[in-house]
Image (cartoon, rainbow, N blue to C red):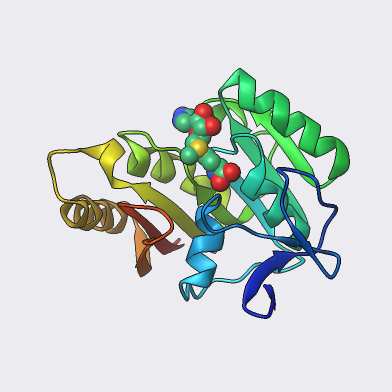
Length: 201
Ligand code: SAM
């Protein structure tokens, strides 16, 4: 991904969420995007032009728009009507985003319209985040990557964030994933861990 003077940017048309521009590139705000936080904190995974991304929890398209600046296509799943309206507006300016209004916990609803993904990215803040991710793994190509942005407080506020992350890693491994990286997203996002895995199939 591109950096200008240490600032993470993406190459696309601006004006999605009032983002700043530097030398014609869009500044990618780590406080608004867990993917940007992950990249700036030293996360190992990169985006590439030939990638197909299945994105769960698209919201109003902030992060989706930056990801779409780097990859071939983003299938963007969101179930709430209000953010979906904004996402559709973002899609008018980016032809490589396919908005899908559906519950990410029910991938059978969109399995027929998405291509096999190289990257499955999930940011849904639900108690069953890991189960949702595992249900979507069949839509990932063999050897593809899952990036789960785990909001630990949504899973169980009584447990420590570390315990929630440890349990998520265990469940992902039991679900057939190889966990490659766990990166906490402080100071940008409190009690969030990026868990990066590979699908072993
Ligand atoms: N990823 C977004 C970004 O960086 O721009 C922010 C996502 S926000 C934290 C979480 C989003 O996930 C919300 O818009 C919510 O409606 C959506 N969401 C939560 N559960 C979902 C589900 N089961 N299926 C689809 N969308 C879901």
